[in-house]
Length: 101
Image (cartoon, rainbow, N blue to C red; front, side):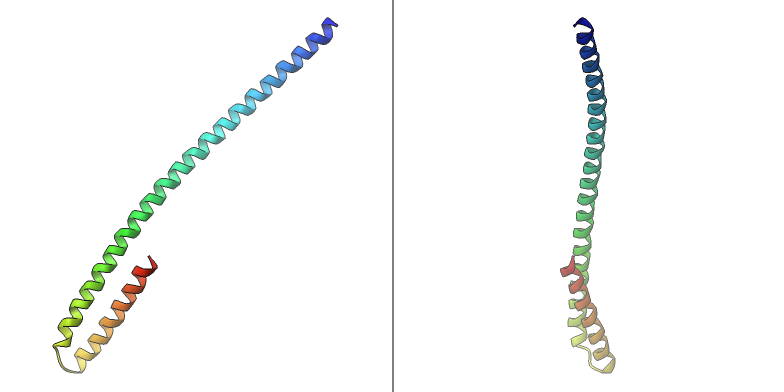
């Protein structure tokens, strides 16, 4: 009876040791996952900031194109018509890019 109890205590001790090792592994994995999540969040925040800056830059380009169009409307001639067309196309492209952002 005593031998059986010693054997059970030994088995229980081994089970506890295995559980401790598994616990340590799980804690380590959780720590790595948390670090990955924090790094991902920082990258996401940085990307969002870059997108906002890019959208502002594109908006400024649109405004400059509109100002240029106002000036070109006062100029007569074939070359002015061609430039108006090019500027209009560029302004539309910039607007589409800003909307996409």
